[in-house]
Image (cartoon, rainbow, N blue to C red; front, side):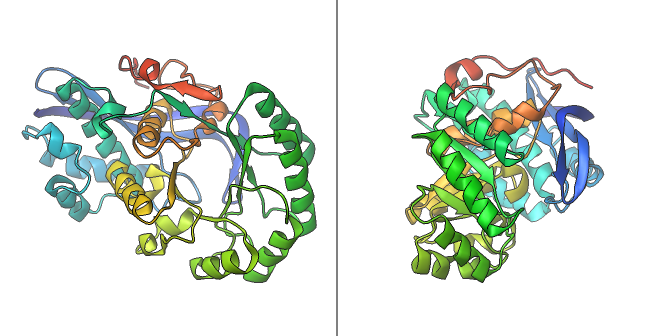
Length: 354
């Protein structure tokens, strides 16, 4: 396949409810859509949407990086299978280019989209020889105790496989009480927690004691120092998952058998190829790979869904879609416990260019 042209389209989408990132209240989600055309007129789409407070780059910086690199691909003949090989020479060369993480995800996704079409495959099929037909989803619980317990009850009634609750934003005792209430409301659904590095090692141990007996799938990043995590697990039995650690240089070295899961956000970990490499490294030591969104548009979320299908089909964190009041594609079926992957990828979505 040959890259014949490219264009970039900044977007701003309203949110259904304001979200606080890095202490700042935001009511919109911004990003840049990348469209690549090949010589046959087919389009491959990607989404660069840096997450405020978590991404190192801004939207403007992601767009500028793509504008600087894309002319080097214009008119270039590419082998579709090389494009889909995350540890091959093509992606090694792209690694050397040093694109910001969100920009790399956009480029990887647009190229993979084109490569899949070139091979006559859906994106999940292009990333894995035998992807699952159904992808379970992970519901996201945010708000005060009354709201998250009520929401957990609705998720249980609808048959969701898992739910994730943010912790570390109130006193340990209050967090523990909320966790117990949510666990009870979820019934048999898996409960995941995300502390976003809010605790010291001593506070994390106190939390582990406070929730003893509550069935937890894992707690993401209890402390800022990943070096605390193995001892925390060994001493308390608290199942710990890696998230922010994997977004840092050398973070993959912490993926060891003690970890309950590696939570991979392709917008933040370096793109589609990097997420696939991290997932393979996790599987090699018996650690589950869990794909999660970063409030991207529907273009980006389709890419995360394909990655989830290609890396073990753990319940995927795509419930951020619920916060988009508008999208750049027609509504996606991400408001339910499970996604029919063949239906989701049966045709390329009609992208509405802003």
